Image (spheres, rainbow, N blue to C red):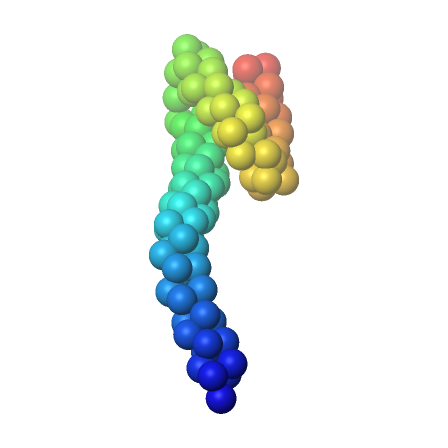
Length: 104
């Protein structure tokens, strides 16, 4: 009976102390996940806006938005390599559109 009581008290202490140690890691995991999703969403939005504006603006506007999009893509891929499969096709589409608009 005493062994069961001591085991239960020890398990309770481990769970309480473990929760206080685990909780900050859970918060950090949520923050990092939200940051990665934000970088993914921002990357897709910036590239889609750059593709749209490549049709609207001509001349120097294409180069300015192209440089901004290129810098953002490289930065996003460097910081969050998991988003490369999402961002790379959009960037390739942007390069093709910029190339064909430049020929006009």
